[in-house]
Length: 249
Ligand SMILES: NC(=O)c1ccc[n+]([C@@H]2O[C@H](COP(=O)([O-])OP(=O)(O)OC[C@H]3O[C@@H](n4cnc5c(N)ncnc54)[C@H](O)[C@@H]3O)[C@@H](O)[C@H]2O)c1
Image (cartoon, rainbow, N blue to C red; front, side, top):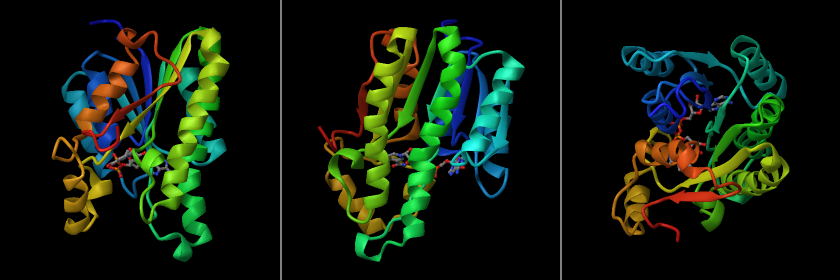
């Protein structure tokens, strides 16, 4: 399909889960992939890179804490210096520190806001300069169904994910005249490491509420991200695509 072949695509949280599936979706088109992650080690990132390389895709991975303004800027400056451009940013990195609010520590609040929301500011601001020069670019940030519904024990997480929606709509207005599109994808309950830690009882009660009757797969989200970054979605900006099996409608 060529339309995004050889584009430079940066995916944060690209070592595993939804980020990894998104990398595989872009890889099919021959995009050049830069993955950022902050896992304790390189195991998952190396597995992802091995699969990408076996498919003949140019890919690299960097262990960078993108909640640091300076570190995120340095990563993106380096990409622009080496490749001369950046075409797609997928703001996917995220963490949870679940606790009911009366028990939540300041550290748990701050960590989630820094990693899930401040990183989106950090990376988006850094890619906008080259994208504005290019007069082209596509940014997709991963929100969550809990941005709309709220969730018991996730005051910090829901706030970070709702923040992404307001951010997306605001920045979309600011850069539309430069042909840069800014959208969000809000996944429901997806089978990844993030949800693997939930007790079976909690999972079962979630699945009961999903009209399609199952958890989603990372590929379900990746397909929506990929589509948003394709020319098929050329007239979409400032939008939120819900990928949740009907959990929120
Ligand atoms: N799994 C779900 O059900 C679900 C639902 C809604 C939204 N989401 C969101 O989708 C995104 C991906 O989730 P997932 O389930 O694949 O998670 P995951 O835990 O499998 O992977 C998280 C990724 O983020 C990276 N990361 C974490 N902190 C980072 C930091 N400071 N700097 C750089 N990278 C960092 C990790 O290294 C990893 O690559 C997250 O933003 C998450 O909040 C997930």
